[in-house]
Length: 243
Image (cartoon, rainbow, N blue to C red; front, side, top):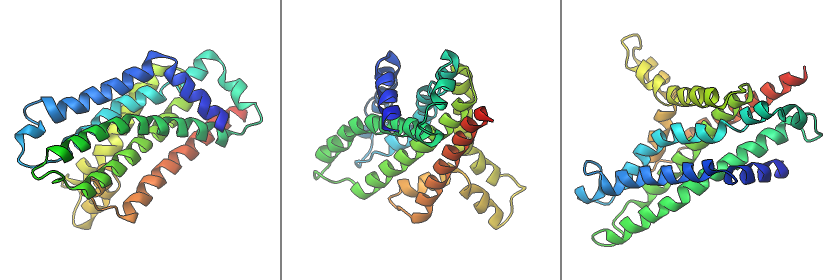
């Protein structure tokens, strides 16, 4: 698993894709926080990183599929996946190695945004006038959200030989998992407690809870369960090649 992890990290940063993804994420989030007049913190009367955590899921819907689309699809294209899965390292080690590498890249993309937090912390009146608990909860939520998207992307990449197709399907799947359940809950077909139940099946519901600084164990369990489900499905998808 460690060897797969190192291989994925090295492969990611050996091409321009890795650097482009990180730069685009930072430019996009930074523009919404500091530059665009409608969302700039300078137009608010209080220090908040709400813009980062509002645009973060949308950015991840496109940037994480750009990372995961090459995880297995590229191996399929080069014909190295069959060689990889026949080596005595096990399907779980392969999948977890690739997943942990993607998770590490998510952390690397979030770490530079701490500059935004410390900047607002210093610019506050008085300095430090920012809800640090809500910021911490939002970071946890955004990290877990990114990991869900990563697990979905790995699963879709595992049965695709075309990176572009893997990217499009993953982006659509992430969009659906995040918003579709919330949309369905607003339809007249859902009555009473059914609308809340349907809404709770979507990622947005749990992400919003954590983003408010309420780190509830039910939300954490939801995120971890979805991640585990797609990792398991990815292992099954790899295993079918041996059948």
